[in-house]
Image (tube, rainbow, N blue to C red; front, side, top):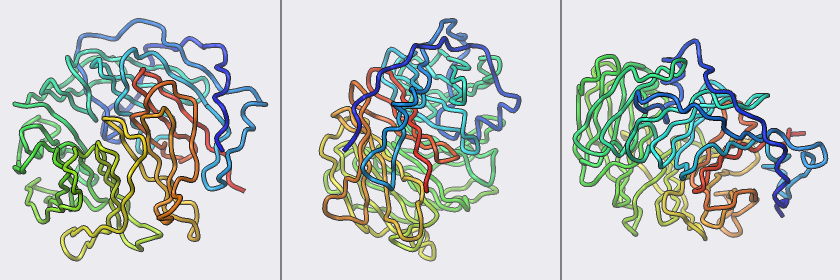
Amino acid sequence: MAAPPPAVPTARPATVGGGFLDILHFLKQTAGVLFGSNSGILSRTASVSSKQSDSERHVRFAEPAYSFVGMHCIFDNCKASVTILKFGRANSDLLAYGSADGSLTVCQVSDPPSVLQKLIGHSKDITASCSMDKTMRVWEISKGTCIRVVYGVSSQLCICFHPVNNNLLLVGNANREINAINFSTGRVISKLTFDNAVTALDIDHTGQLIFAGDAQGYIYTVSVNSHTGSLSRTHKNKSCKTKSLITTIQYRTFSLVARCPVLLSCAQDGNLYFFSIATNAHGYLTVICSLKLASPVQSIRASFCPLLSLEKGEFIVTGSGDSNVYFYDLARPKSSCVNKLQGHGSPVHGVAWNHGENLLASSDSDGTVIVWKRAKSN
C-alpha cells in the first residue's frame, strides 16, 4: 500500500547560471536529453521543493524490494508536459529533462537541489535529446549557448551515443531512418532505412548492436561498426500485435530471469515486452513475457529497476495515466504489481534512475518532476 502524498515543504528558490567543467562529458554521458538552441537562458526562478520532514521521510512502502522514504525534491519550473528525463550516466546528481514547450532543463538533485540551466530554442516537442522541429542541437551547458545545430529533413525522434566511440551519434527520425552522425562535424556518415518512423533506440554495451522500435510496434536489431559507423539490419521482431508506437527501448547486460542479455520495450498502448537477446545470433530477440498496463498514457515510458540480489525477480518501473508510478515484477505473471508511488497530480510520462540507484525521477503532464529517495537496504 502506497503512502499518501506528503505535504510539500517550503519552496526553495533555484539558482540559474551554474554549469559543468566538462560539458562534452556530460552531454555524451547523459545520452538522452541534450539539445536546444541559442535563444538564451530563461532568467527566472524555479520552485524547487526540498526534502521532507523526518516524520514524512520515514514512511515505508509495503514491498521490501523497492521501498522509498518519500520525496527527495520537486522541480515545477516547467509549465508544459515533461515527456523525457535522464540522469547523467556516470553521475548521480545531474538530471536533465525535456518539456513539450521545447525547453530543456538541467538541474542538480544533491543538497541543495537547484536548476542549473533552462535552455530555450526548440520550436516543438523535445523527444529524447532531439526535436520535432527537425534539428539536433548541442549546448554548452555552462554558458547556456548553442554550440552546434544539425539539421535533418524530418522530425528527430530518438538518439543515443555510441558507448565505445564517443564521436558517433545514432539518431532515429520520422523519415524511417537511423543515421550515424559524426559528433564533431555533424555529418551523416551512414544511414539505414526502415518500414516506419524510428521512435526509440538503445545500444548494447559492446557497441555492436542497436535495438530500434518504430511507429508500428516493430523492433529491429541493427549491427554497427564501431570504427566506421556503418549500419546493417539483421533482424525484425513482430511480437507486438497491436501496431502501437514504441516509446521505450532499453537494453540490459544481464537478467536474473533469462540469464543472458535482455531488452525491454514499451508501446504507447501500454503493452510491455521482455525479450532475451541471442548475442551469438546477431541479436535475435525472443519474447520471455509480456505485460499490459492498466492505465496507459500516450507517451508512457518504462525502465528496468536496479538489480536487488541473485534471488529476487526482474523489476521494472513505469508511469501511468492515473498519476501513479508503478513497479512490476516480470517474474510474477500474476499479480505482478508490487508497489506504487503516489504524489503526481496528472498522468506520469517519464521515469529514470540515477547512477547510484538510490534516486528515481518521474515526470508528469503538468510539468512537475519528482525525485524519490529509495530506502536503504538492510
